Length: 297
Length: 292
Image 1 (cartoon, rainbow over the protein chains, first blue to last red):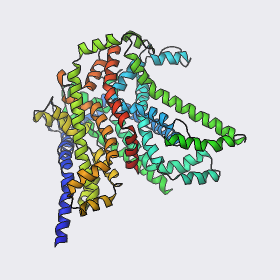
Image 2 (cartoon, rainbow over the protein chains, first blue to last red):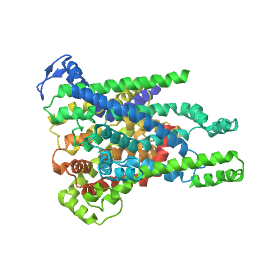
Image 3 (cartoon, each protein chain N blue to C red):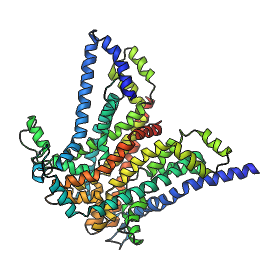
Image 4 (cartoon, each protein chain N blue to C red):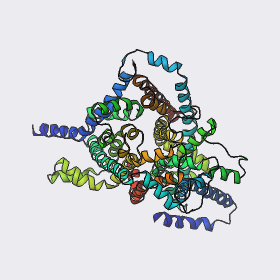
């Protein structure tokens, strides 16, 4: 009897601890998500919405600006995420070597960009990549380029700057996750492999990568979500228009423009936002499947 | 630090065997590692140097790539302070970041503790659902959230910026992971001493988990201080804008005054830099605790 009362008390205390968070998440996350799913099937301007069935999805397939934004977002994702993950992994392995000097210094320096806000660093990059700016001057001094590159007015180079900028900002962040995970790996495994004459690259490929797989998966999923939501940098670089000629327009920026800049079209912008949800879902699933597949083989 | 003692201890055998030909390649590899790390560190730090140098140069010099200190610091500062109501802007940013961080840590750590200490099948299901929600981008809830805030007549208020971010699934998850390392004997002992659960949380759990709280403080404070999209939507008049919004507005000008803008950028970055360096050691400890 007393036992049962105690168990019931435990049960209630458990709910009490999580209740504030659950109420807030329900109100400010779950409710808006369900609402936006509902909205995505509605058409009309402003708050004058009516049920439109699949009209918005049909509009998506015929909207060249949307297709442009989707393509750009994919380009950023496919080029940027792998570069960053590989770089972060290599840096983490290099910094995990206990015999390395100035480890703390290197680690802090490489992590430092994460301290910078997305807006602050996009301002920095915008000034560094000016036509006569410091980057062009350095590249010309090193004879890598002959004439200055017009970074922000060329559709290709504008994408390159964004990829460089995101990589600068987030590589150290991912590196910290790998470093933390590497420090949990038993060093004797590496010692044994080294004594057995396993070369460094093989130790990396067959010991480090498999053991870090859960963390790599985690950071890849987080980076995927981040890249698909890309907004601050692009908004700041291009004064909100995703230029030149929509070459850097991302899905999030398009949603913002649809909602707050053009004639507000809440239903359609909700539909575009669900495209991100679906794409994130599919990509995460693929990443999970790849990670599981490798384990079984 | 321990790093250096370990390094010197391990460096000795390397030096002793360096006459062997096999070690030549080891030395080459080592040099390449140092070179690459130095390049990475240089690229990481250079923009910070650029930002500080930029505050002392005129906009024209910055665009020409001048990477040495100039004499325009006072001019940039004066332009900034005449164009921007700095005190007001900083108050907005500080209020939102500090209140937001305190509330987020309180509510999310309570939930993390609750999920880990009181397990039931229903609560495990809810936790699983929350992890699933983690992957839903902010864009998907942005529009309804704005309509809700507008209907509640909260547009242009601090409350509208802070409250929707307070329950953070990521921080709840982080605290739950870290709580796995919390020694259960401590909780049992406190229970025998007659402490109630909330007292255990307040007087035992929180002090023991201070590294976790420190790491979470860095993450949440930075996220709040640097938050852009949601404040951009909700804060609409100049006197309510945060420093992050102001820097963005200055950068987006048709012909930005980069000297003044970089001055503003330094001011916007300083608080997060200070917090980071104050809590850095605990941050690494806290991260290690969560990944374990």
